[in-house]
Length: 171
Image 1 (cartoon, one colour):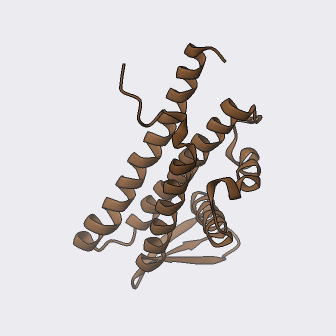
Image 2 (cartoon, helix red, strand yellow):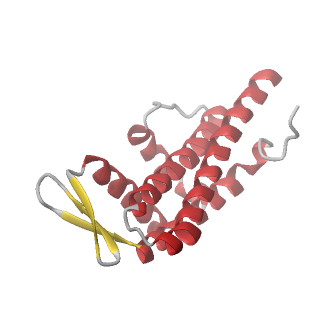
Image 3 (spheres, helix red, strand yellow):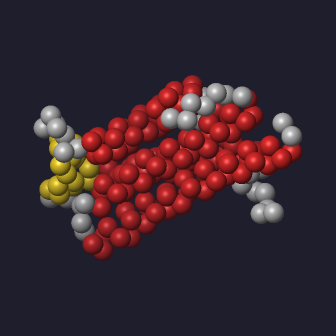
């Protein structure tokens, strides 16, 4: 790989990771600062959506890094690329609980997008599917997801840190 290709690949990885961190900060701010002030459970849908986007961007950064360093094939669609990430879970130091939580966040975000209705009930947001199946999201569950997503992003960053992309000065 030539120097310009290496720099370009490092930039793509860094951009994807920067996007993940930005969205994580947004989700954290909404959950820890804005929600306690406003107390509107409808914010939970936006927070969950942001957490799913954080995971997609972080996993995309990890897979881009693997693509450039190990020639791992990328299919450009999260659902198709995710199994490659799961196969490399030991490389990132991820536990089975973290992978389960990643799957749960992604499943809930997808379910929310496809939901026919969502409404606040007591201290939670209820998602109602077309088949009248319900799923509840509350502040405690979102805080758990936030901590898991933060940990996963930190582990990914630590694993791909040698890519120089995060410490490189802006040229």
